[in-house]
Amino acid sequence: MVPRRTRPFFNKDSYRTVLPSNICARLLTTTKNGRKEVIYICLGKAVTVGRNPRLCVRSPTGGVLVSCQDLSRNGIVINGNRIKRTPVILSEGDQIEIPSSQTFKCVSFSKDPNKKIGLFDPTPPQQPVHKKIGRYIVTSKCLGSGTFATVHLAHDSENYRQVACKTIRTKKQSEISQVMKEAGILMSLNHPNINKVYSAEQDENFLHIFLQLCTGGDLFTYITDVFTRKRTRICEAEVKYIMYQLFQGIKYLHDQHISHRDLKPENVLLYCPGPYPRVLIADFGLARPNAYQETFNVCGTVSYLPPEGILALARSMLIFSRMPSDCWSAGVIMFIMMT
Image (tube, rainbow, N blue to C red; front, side):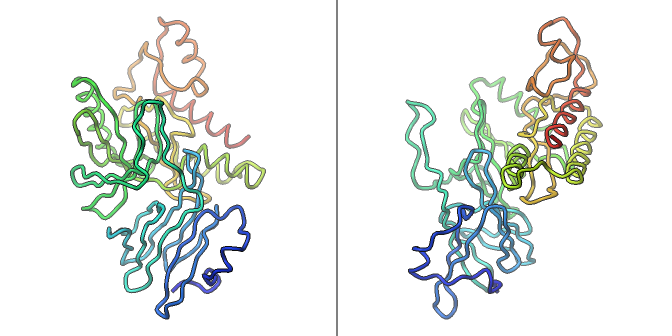
């Protein structure tokens, strides 16, 4: 059952009430008595429904993510798909069923309209669509996009969990072979602070990489959100906790002779929303094996490069070491959190 304090009555007058600006979604349900009720979900404040807390966090794409963490033994059912002991993202119109209990419908207050990115791009569908790729069902809900790839929400039908599907468009067979080789290396990684790569599937000229879903957004969004809400930086104890995890992940990568080469807050994900989060290093698009070898090839975000990396950008004949660059980037991340 839902705690009474989180269950305001659902009636006509509730629509006329001026709601606080931090409310981002509501869950609608009908009790066994036929009474309609509504549960409001606020930004940055968890609401417990049964044993499943929900929380709204700001999305890296500028919208709002409604995150749900299943803590029960029986799991929950979302749109007919059973989810067990894993965080999920709720979308507009999702049906959430607690087995042998209530069924809820998610209604978002901050709907992200589908828009064209380019002038000649096709008009996106106004209703959600799905596509089956292997054992995964990929939805049209976009979690993020970049220059080379787009990330969509997907469902793993065999393991009862939501995943992130990173889609890369390739033009040459050599590019596909190279990306598949790199994906194979990343699939062998297994660490609590590394974003897990489950599998990679090819579909025509598209390569789909299925990743562990993180529902708390990225570290950059978390830093800015804390400052916006509290007008202060992240506390020192929490910075220590985050940096400890970050260095554990970097050490594991370097022990496997892999360098990330583009560490920054945008590439560090929060597994679940809330303070003192579990963080995972993600986005290995520039990662390379044999990281102990020196190279003339410098890449990454300039703001997070060490001095020798910036000099190597200007002087192509300078040798650059990859592993120390990751450690310098981690130090810059810590400086950003502390100031």
